[in-house]
Image 1: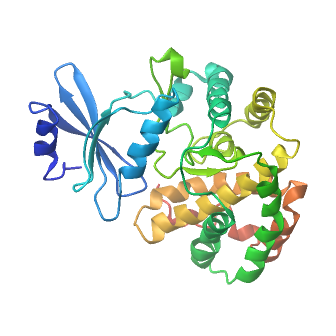
Image 2: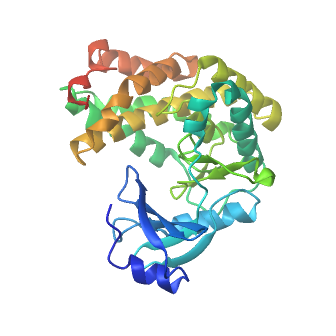
Length: 328
């Protein structure tokens, strides 16, 4: 976590010439983050090195969200050639760690997060590419591309595509109109901040946003890859969303389909992070992801996809099949 060579000159030009640049965090991509400290002032330096990373989508969506009254980090300065962006610092209190310390607040805080989504979904979508059938299929295909070979399975990939083609039309029909889908709306990307007008919730990691179905971000929140959301909280928050947003009657079916699609995708991504990127720690999340996926597959709307899993991935090749590769 050494700052990039251009960082010192960049923060100086931005008016932070005497600041310290301290390691903060990385994520599953090549992006890295540093805290910039100048006396009482704090900011965050995003290092999104080109050509692999492009910070322009993050900047565009941050400005769109801020313009709609949501708490996305203010963009303080940017150098797109170097992939450097100086952004507002939302502090260190992520929803995940807050709930670990204050579990009694789970329902109240998740209610606020659900209401934020309902508010976002009541507004026109940002100018974004569509989250369409081609994207859904490409993402779901990460499971057959990465996970199945890792556990020694040769599966019927054509039938897998056909199974998804059989269930995705319900999702396509059920959305009244596309909404801004942040795509990674979960407890590690939601900050608790002192901004009552934004429900006290700061948004991060939305650079991959698309225009799609409102159920997707609700799945991201309530079927979290990195923390266990109690089933009773998930059910209560689904009911809360229905009460606030008044979605169509088939919303629960769309939620299950997109839950299965997202969870299959994440199983593939986490396997790829191990196999391709040398990050085995993500394998420890796979038992949770399989549990969530199997819950979604039990919904009647997912019959063809559930049948494919039953025929192609036996029980002993799920859950902890890669456990021996995960770090202790």
